[in-house]
Image 1 (cartoon, rainbow, N blue to C red):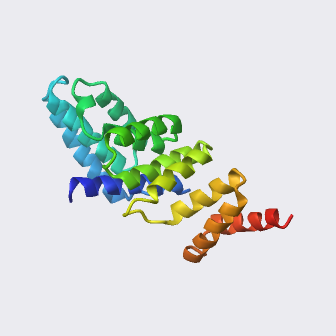
Image 2 (cartoon, rainbow, N blue to C red):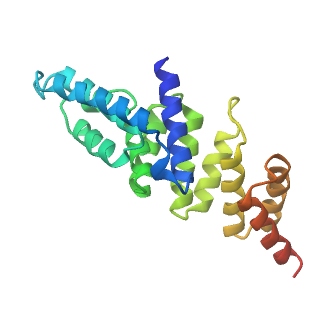
Amino acid sequence: MSKHLAIFIIGTQILLACASAQKEGAVSANLETQVRADIKGIDQQMTDVRPEDKRYSELLLQKAKLLLKIESFKEASLVLRELQNSKDGRNLEHLDHYLGSAYLGINDYDNAIVHFRKSDNVDRDFESVTRKKMWAKAYFEDEKYGQALGILGRASKEKNFEKDLFYYETVVVSFYRIKEYKRCQLVLEEGLQKFPESLVLKETSEKINQVLQR
């Protein structure tokens, strides 16, 4: 598996985990066991490396990515903070992307936003769509609906962007919360054609109809 594909999968997992009401059971027991064994191996390697060595930072990053893979976001955030404060950690690629992902996973939206913004500045072409969706998720959960809409608007112009269920539910609810009812209705109609079973879209449709009938 390529490095970029692995990172894309991690980002997708984080979005799904944050959106799911059953987040705790999202990772299979077999995957958890396998990844924990890999992490144990990394911990053993780290005992033979001095903290000031570059290899130590590389091992920390490997460990953090594995923790993100099994949605152990709190542990990942602690490892990434240690990495951030290490001698060579700040020079490692994509560190802000991983920090934003971990903070989003533990509902620390302010820090997630900070690091996704930094990642967008230094890693603009790296997993851009996935990052923007997670960044928008952080803004949305922090009730900053205008900012969430702005990020998704930028993301939607990228050639590999997909208007998925996350996109429609986030945009529709954001427009509704900021009382942009006409724009909400336009996106809502399109979203319901693609995802007619979405409870969020159906409930928002009922609310919009009530508002516009007044």
